[in-house]
Amino acid sequence: MSSDQMTAVADLPTPDLTFDPDAPGACVAGVRPYRDGSYRLGTETVSGRFIVHNYGHGGAGLTLSWGCAAKVRNLVQERVAASHDTKVAVLGAGVMGLTAATMLRDLGLTVTIYSDLMPVETTSFKAGGQWAVSIVAFAGKERELKDILKISYTTFKNSIGKGFGVSEVPNYTAKPSENLELVLALVPGLLPPRVSLPRMPFEGHTKPGFKYQTLLVEPPIFLDRLEKDLEARGVRIVHRKFISKADVFARLTEKIIVNCTGMGAKKLWNDTKMIPIKGQLAMLPPQPALRYLYGQDGYMFPRSDHVVIGGTFERFVNNEIPDKAVCQGLVDHIASLFGRAVPRPLPDIHIHHPRNAQMVNPAMPHLV
Ligand SMILES: Cc1cc2nc3c(=O)[nH]c(=O)nc-3n(C[C@H](O)[C@H](O)[C@H](O)COP(=O)(O)OP(=O)(O)OC[C@H]3O[C@@H](n4cnc5c(N)ncnc54)[C@H](O)[C@@H]3O)c2cc1C
Image (tube, rainbow, N blue to C red; front, side):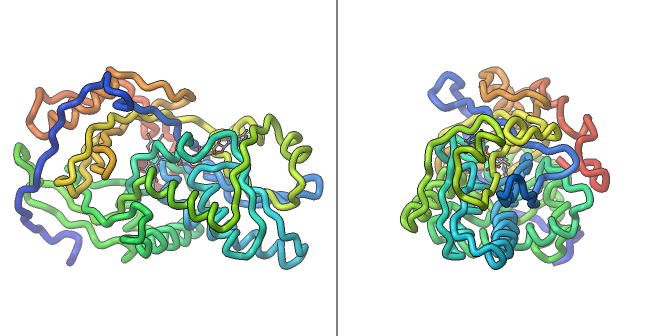
């Protein structure tokens, strides 16, 4: 189907947007590990240790995880062929650490994960879950990003129905989704083409819109599955907090170290390019009848554990303290789009959006 074909779709069930910001777990905040210029995926050798860095994936870590893990595996495999080392330390138990550890274990290596947080406590656990290239810089790395996207998407897609929390879903948007348009432009044919709709298929909607087909990756299910599979294959998560690079070298014996510390790399590796971008989420009870993603500024991702409503960006804010008024504002914004409330913009913090700060790839100035 061509991308400009206009297709009418029957109306779909709409969300119940009743929200109690005081309910336990109703408001969540996380910090996207954004790296100015580009994410870091590469090697260095320090004090006889071979380091593979894999961090700085901003708002797209879940999306890029398997592809980056495959790159890490290839780099380590080359090293192992030359050095015959068999032990690898992975720093970090977020999505980057767990997927890298999985692929390194596939090589038959002895892998140990070291982390000050368990997977359930990481930023990765807080991700919304859409497979889309959101808020990540990749200047000069377009070719590498293409490979990463192909591997990631294919790996996630092949895991549908196998207990990894992955499903294929449409995403309805009033305006073209820059995060998904980027994928369509970079890797034509990877995702089904965008469909133009004469009207968004929801009660209360009168204007045209777009339908994309992408994946939903539910972090609580995905991370739990990775952790259990790793444990079953003899990969332990050792609780450890490192205070500096020197501390890493002093306390680890492994000669190959894979650094997946996300925002932690700012301090640990003195990486001044790391910029925190806080995001907040309103978590509503699950509504299984909703089988689509929805977005117009802000977004709504119905998952099996919650209907997740998000879309705020606070640049340089490095704390995970949720603000109930902000979460309520997110819900009110989505409610207004469904004609349930007086139309109102997202909470004020949306204006700190990276688009305004020109933090994104110059080739895609509106990538968010
Ligand atoms: C609100 C929000 C919504 C998001 N939605 C999406 C989405 O829909 N799709 C998507 O693809 N991405 C999304 N993301 C982005 C995604 O969550 C991140 O890109 C991803 O989690 C980064 O993974 P990571 O493993 O690099 O970092 P983390 O998950 O932060 O893991 C870092 C690990 O390193 C460990 N560590 C750090 N420092 C140290 C230290 N000094 N010593 C020991 N251990 C250390 C931590 O304990 C942790 O285990 C979202 C993020 C936020 C905040």
